[in-house]
Every structure is written in structure tokens, then in C-alpha cells.
Image (cartoon, rainbow over all chains, first blue to last red; front, side, top):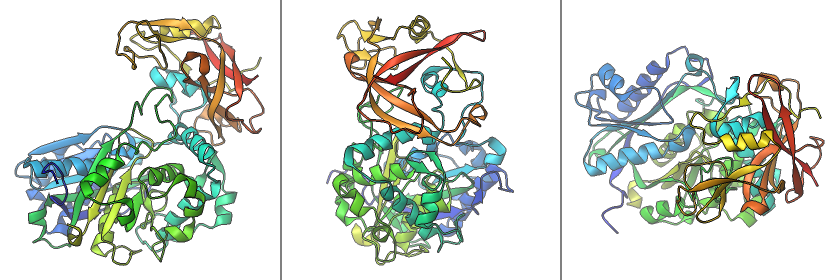
Length: 393
Length: 145
């Protein structure tokens, strides 16, 4: 294999999360949430925060690496990096960037982080309340197409139309996340199980998305600490190695006014082949998947575009029994994910993939060795990482 | 004709760089005017400074046929803007224009918002004037043929 692959060169040393809150309910300021998650990731790894020398974030995070470095007393900062793209499309790309910097020798201890306090800074899921609107949104907002759910629903409608996929497939994806959240004390929806009846009776947000097809909005922070594979061997936790990492999107994916080349798409069809080539595995080798649920329809297309299911088999494959950690064919979103654990712009899903390989999940998949974690379907760029245990190197 | 959605949503305004002015001038005159490359003759929408097919900067604006085909749609129920609080369901359609290289436009389907929406059906443009305010504008809506 070419020396230009990231495979096995970088490992996750530590993960950290704050308490996860409903949106607007964090008692802590956003910057404090970020600090707490970073310090927790360092504690988990057994590395002093002062040893961090690289910072990577995404989704236009507001917490500047220079301020973090000063606050933490970081000795030297050798990397400050922002992954382009709003929303959570960068939740894996942020780790890809950090890993690349370590492999290139730019930095040794890189923290990838995201902090969100919507009470302090305002929320998502609303249309712009301004008198005039310009640019691309002038061609959509006056028609009542304004929110993320509305921006993506037409892609999913077209995809389901082309492949004859039924609403029950989306329901199974939602129920898998809620099922797993019931065993996860960190999950915001812990203690709030979802039934088929409850899903079917829930209000439409925008067809084909019921309320339970849409992610939550939350306050909190998450952080992941990356080091070289050599360094990871001597740390507190069992390392999870990066086997492959890719971000991007296909032909004119962000073309204005819904004119993308491959419209009914999660935007992973060009990204996934790079991932599998680097990781030197096939989709059949994936033991557990964490797929970013902004909306369930995006999960469906992401799994198909990663080769985890064929479109013509979707109605049979997307059933709850196939998706749960307790004996499912392909356990999915085993923390509860963005629907039912926390919407930390998908960084929580990356952490859950790592936990599965350490054997620390609250919905542990037996002998999980390879985990896939994808971020941000339907936006551009999207990103994915495949993690493996030492056995897979 | 009553407007499809209530007043109070953000009004469209031309871009500060004037890139899309010919489109908005066209709709005011009840014409559908979009970009066409003078080099390769391909249409493109939305507007951009360069042709995405041949990378020519020599783009012109041209009137295209006011007919299309429903490519996708969504039925919206949850109001995400105060102006839509009492609206109930409404339908947004994505319409492709077969006479203009299948570029797509977003609009509303002027029909019972709870009726089935036939993907692939032929539609024609309906111009919805908004003459009030200090910057009058016209939206392009669609109805089944």
C-alpha cells in the first residue's frame, strides 16, 4: 500500500463529553463546556491538557484555539484548523484533518472538539426572521423552504420514489436510536422509549419526516484526543486506530437552488470508495455503524452509499431487529445518536464508534473490531472515518 | 389571485453584486429569464459568474418556456416562521425545465395542499405579484397542466 495512506498511523487516545442538555438548558457558558470536554478527554487519555499542541474543529465552532491554548496553559500550539461547512458534515473530517497533521509531523497531541450552547447563541431549525433575503435563499425562502428539514426532505422524497422505499424504513432508523438510548444514561432521551404507534402518531414536520425522524438540538461539548500510533500504545485506554478517513462531495453537490448533479443523495457516493481503499476493507467487514442522523432519510442514503445495504433491499434491511446491538445484522447508532443521545453535531457518534472498539459502550456489540462513523449526510462536504482495533492493523 | 403563502415571510431582494437582477426583472414582467452560456449554449440555474459546463465567463440571460415537470416535492406541516403559524400544510415543488437543460427551480404547487403530488407531472408557471412594499417583486409558482 502507498505510504500516502493514513491507515494505522494515528489513534484515539482519549474521549471527553460534558453532560448533555436540551437546547438552551446548559448552566455553563459555551466556552466552559468546551474546556470541560477537552479536559475530560485528556483525563481519559492520561495526558496533561498542557501537552495539547493542535486544535481542530468544524461547523464554524466559536471557540478559538488561541483562547483555548491560553486558558489551558498550552505550552506551544502547532496547529489550528477549521473544517469548512456548516452543520455536522465535518464531524469526521475534523478528525481526518487532525490525523493528517499528526502523520505529517505538524503536531503530536491534537484535540478535535465541538461546543454548543444555544441559550447563549440562538438555535437552529427556524427560518430567518428578516424583512429581506438575498442570494440563493431568495429563490427558496419566499416559498416557505427555510429550515434544514425542509432543505433535505425533497432529496429523500425523490430517493424513496426512485427506489420504492417505504416510510417504515425511516421508522426503523428512528427506533434503533431510541432503543439504544434506553440503555445509555448520558442520553437525553433515556427513559423515553419510542414505539411504532408513537412514531406513526407523531406530527409531521415535513413529509417524509415525522417529529422522531429529526435530530434534537442540544447544549454540551465533546472532544477527542488524537496521537500517533506509537504514542497510543503506552496510554491508559485501548487505542482505536484510524483505518481510513475521507471527506468531500460529488459533482456540483452544492449547486444552487437544488441543482446538484446527483440530487437524491447523501453526498457520500464519491467519498466512500476513498475510505474503503485506505482502510483495505469492504463494507461486509463493518461490525458496527454510527451514522449521523440530522434526519433519518439521510441515514438511509448514507448506508446505501457506503455499500452497507442495496437500495432494492432497503425495505427488508431497515427493520429494527437488524439494527440493534443485541444480535442485529448491523448495529446502528448504539448510543442513541443525534436523535436520542445528543446532537453535538455528530461528534458524539464518533466517540461511540471509539467506545465500541474499547468495549465500553452501553450497547456493546460483541467483539466489535471495525466501526464506521459517518457525518452530515446531504450537506457538503460530508465525512466518514473507519476505526479499527489493534487486531485490524 | 390570493397569494399562496401569507405575507410576512422574507421578501427576495437582488444580490448586492447584481448577479441575479435580470431574473427578478424578468419575473416582474411575467417572463422566466435564466442564465445561458454564450459559448456552449447550456442553461444554468441558479445564477453564477461562470458557466459550470465550459467555464466561459460569457454568460447571457435568456427567456425560457414557462413549463416544467415535477422532479420532487415536500409537504410542510411544521411552521418555522411566525408568518406561517396559522398556515397549515403547504407544498413546495422542485420543478425541472425540460426546455432548458433540465435546470431545476423551487416554487409552490398551486393545488389542494393535502392532495397527492404526482412526481413527473407537467406543470406551468404562474406569476404571483407582490406589488406592495418599497421593493415590489414577483414569485414564480406552478400549477398542474
